[in-house]
Image (tube, rainbow over all chains, first blue to last red; front, side, top):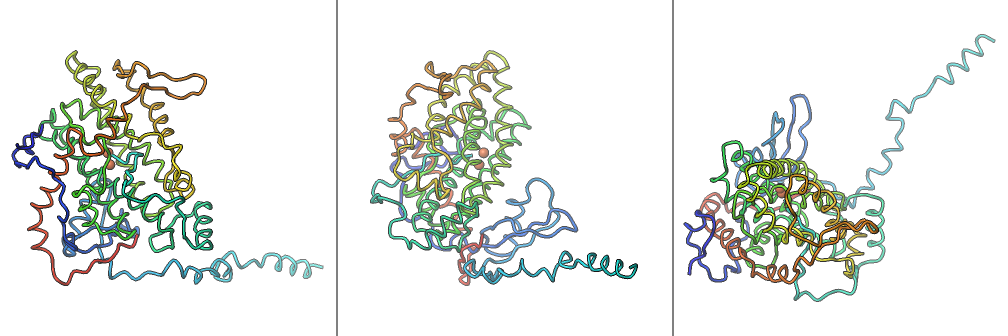
Length: 126
Length: 332
Ligand SMILES: [Fe+2]
Ligand SMILES: [Fe+2]
């Protein structure tokens, strides 16, 4: 007996009605490699990482990225890069960033000379 | 759509007395402190084995639900009444497939390749939301699915988007944004039919009658007494109990169904003024378990169609595959 669907297109597939569960269908790598996708909303703004696509090459990755990440709203540009080409810091090594907030000498707010100027002016006028 | 609250548990899996069994207590404490502080967990962080396993199961099931969920609606694209409805339905169905891709990627970051997830869908090892084992018999079913199933999914997905796993939260943020369009277009069709001719009104009433039970099943049976719920909630894998989500859904949508003159097919449905909770008649949990087991009206068709698609796309994928291709787990 053939599977009887409400969808005529499904009926035209002539699917078998027996238990459809089977073990191995897709083999490893059948969905290719992954590419990381970067999306630029407007000219003049940064490209921002927005996710991945599976693709057999960069051209197809751009095509899939357009469908997946640029199908509504505004887009001015897309980049893709193979996941394997992205080098990343291990989250376990996050202590390398630890002292950064203390480096006030790198910040405009780390320089406050007004007190000293006022002191100096007071002395001058005295 | 379509992450229901119900996450299928493999009955052959030996239950653990507690989920953190055998984990390094120091790392576990750090991990739990991070979550308690509202920080996100990222793919290459240390995590308890059960946190990883439960998340893969949940996100994967959510992804399958998006793919399979597009089938009953997809049926109606060719028969949608009018150009505008057809364009909207095509856009919605494309979004759902996009959601599946976002979710598969999030699950992949936990170490399970996409091919393996699809294999587990086709061999029946992993499940998808039970509602999609029911057919969309008329155009009004498309209204009920788009309006109420998507609404139910939003309740679940908004809750989960505040969870602890970074990639899942990021995917859900984007998904929730698109779901609001699905809900609006579903509500639009629903209201249009309910306030239309007698025939249209009857059509949408019949569709709701068919879908009400599956909708009540959507969030899954009560899980307040489940031994693992507490840990999963502390780890922010599970963000709300099934009962709470169901109540939230009823609070929001019962009035929206009634205001256009449609009757909810449950004579016992009423809000208890003392507890402020919706009380409802037995939605037939026996049927729910029967359908999960594979005996619903469309289980075989859904899997067979999915398998057909993989089988018929294989030659294209293989033609484009190069021997040099190497799989790398996605970064985020
Ligand atoms: Fe949706
Ligand atoms: Fe969705």
